[in-house]
Each structure stands twice: as C-alpha cells, then as structure tokens.
Image (tube, rainbow, N blue to C red; front, side, top):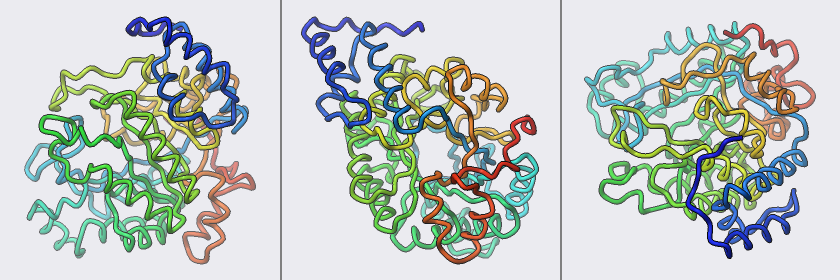
Length: 408
C-alpha cells in the first residue's frame, strides 16, 4: 500500500508511538493522549496501527461490512449557513436552487423502492426561511409554517406511501423537534464536524455559518441522547482543524455516547476540493491522513459503528477496511451524492467484490443500525410496523430486499 509521505518523525516520537502500539489491547478504548500520538505516527508505524484497528473491528463485528441502500432527497438546498467547503447550499435565484415538491419526493422514493432501497435520506439547508423571504413564500404556498414542519410531513409521506424508512439530517434541533421527527423516522443525524472554535474565525471554514458553532451542535446531539434517539454524527477531516482537534472531536462523541448510549454511527468524512467553493485551493487530506484518523477512531471507539464514505476515498476506498471501518454508509443505486456530486457512488456489485477481497461479506442494513432496531420496533404505531416489516431477525434488511444485482 503506497502512502503519502509525512514529515519525518523525531526518534523520540517513534519510540513513544512504538510503545503505544505495543500497549494497545484491541477492544479496549485508548486514551486521548495515546490517540494524539498515534494519529501522528510515521509511515513506518502505520501498518502496525492499521493491524490493531482491524483487530479491534473484528472483535466488534467480525467478518461483515454493512451499508444502507438509499435514495438521497435534497428537500431544499437553500441554507442560511455559508461554509467554505460546501457546494450543496444555494441562495434563492442561484442556478440549481430548488425545494422539492411532495410529488417529487414521492416519485424518487418510489423509484428507489423498486431498486431495493430501504432508506430515504433527507438532507436540507438549516432553517433557510429565517434568512430568505423567498423560502417563507415557498413554505406558505406548500402549506407549512417552517422547513421543519415540511420535513416532518415529507417523512410521514414516505413512511405511509412506501416501504422506505426516513433518515433526516435537518441541522440544529430543539428538544421538541427531536421528538416530533423521531415519531416519523427511526434515526436521524447531525455531523458534529469539529469541536474547534478556531474554524469560526474570519476566513475559516465556518466563518459565516451560525449553525456550525460546536457547542450548539453538541447540544442537539445530547438532547437526542436524552430522548434515546438513534443518532448519526461524525467529523469532517481536512477543513482547517489540527490533529488534536480531530481527536478531541472523537472524544466528545465518545463522551456523549457513554452518557446516553444513542450514537449509532460515527462518520469519518474527508473534505474534497471543488472548483467553486471558497476553499477551492485548500489541500485535501491525504490517504495517510484518512487511514490514521479512521484507525484512531476505531481504537478510541472500539464498540461503536464507524463509517467512511467509499466515493470520497476512491480509488483506494477498500483500504478503509484495514483501518477499522465496519460500514460504508448510505450508497444509492438511483440518486447522486448531492453533497459531493462529482464523486459517484461505487456500483454495488463492485463494492461487494472489494469488500470480499478484504475478507468481509457485504450486508445491507436499515437506516437504523441493527443494535437499535429492537428498541425502535418495540414502540407502537406506523413507524414500528414498517420497521418490523423491513428487518430480519438480526436487525438487518430482510433477505427478500437484499439483491445487489438489481442496482445500477
């Protein structure tokens, strides 16, 4: 495996890293201090780090890598945040600015249903009506008070009229809205991205993004934990944070999960350059950066689901298995990755072959992870009924729905 070179490590750091690797017990969480040393390990020590991470993953979920077959529903790309790395968001009147109609939502969901999808991923800008009168008018025309009211209705529409299960990513949420969306979706998500407040400074990635204040995002994740909502979160690698920031973000996620037990998935996502963003000339994280970060995530979070998007690490994405992931995240046979449209999803048959080349089988899961399915299905109502119908005895997708060959 060819790795991007990093700055030579002083001998004393090499010795400390070697001692750390020798002391790691796969399956037991490492300390923050050990993580800080390992995330900066040398190329020579990287194989040892990866071996420990893979061993920890195999203790957690041996022989299997999961994925969720989804449709991506960009409910609205209007957003009040201006992140330096984002091409998804639009202002009203910009080319491509769009809010989906209920008819469009249902048409995409039904098309995905025919291809064996079980997840309806809703992505949207954060409360655009607070900034744009045009969005307020769109919502009035559709008959809703806010973007969150509209999202709630569209989750219920998909739930009632298809076999898909909604998974919304709506941004910051109040306690009330967490409860409302939990009634129409078995899981939801919010990327923490980073705990670094330095990225809020002028010219930094979150300079003009009021909803990216780390404390506010941590509060939403915590409030979801208090309500026992299965929750997806993660970090964004390469947006100006330091190696220490990456470790601190993972530790913050671990602390919340230890308190509430609700974080179903931790995404390690790498920044990718695009031509029309403020960070168009920013360096992308290297292959080595990603492997180190994923491996340290696995050792910090040995009994948590860790995912890295395969399309953002092509062509070497299968090497992420060596770093300890146990999930590929959502992969669509129908819709593009609207957040990174220049990076197509891998063909599901190719994903299967590459996963099997790493001595793991590929299994389709629901948007809610297997270990959270029983609790969600124990509730009453339509959501629980749909969840029980979709899940097999192991909390994965019922065998009749797993047909990789049906996807493009």
